[in-house]
Length: 195
Image (cartoon, rainbow, N blue to C red; front, side, top):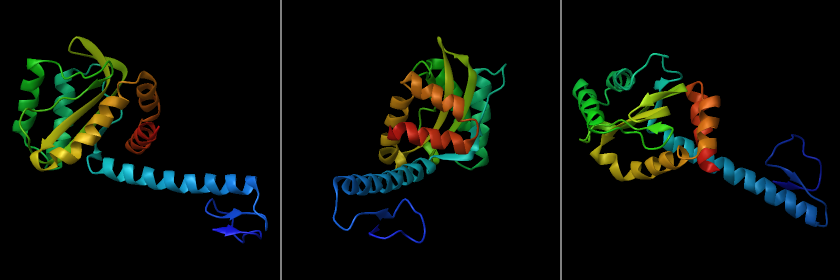
């Protein structure tokens, strides 16, 4: 809302302007409109990511003695509890990991089964701080993905964004450092994706 008088309630959606519009007024209006657009964009992105992530499938810190197998089993158990996959999917994910490491970047491993048999696409996440051995390297974020054939196209964009985010060291460190619980993890992930 634009007003030439002091508003009764202070809000970032209300911009006070002069009766004769100035350059400074235009800049304040543009800044307010930008904040509203960004807020909407972030809310949409958070909603989109919320389709795949859930608080019950998040491990803030893995145990110091964790192994790739133990992390996959723990993340898998959380997806099994949600009814997204069955125990067979977890075993197929372990078989897939034995074929070759699913570490995509220096910081991200994405264990998954070869078949798309999940009831819906979902991601279970674990944070390793400090990093843990995974294949030939070390990772800090493990995102076990349960794929569903019906969600394949919709998920592709999210997956590409994840790989991009976790290929940038500064982004990874920000998420790992600040994402100690599910809410802060999702907030940081959204903020990093948004740039």
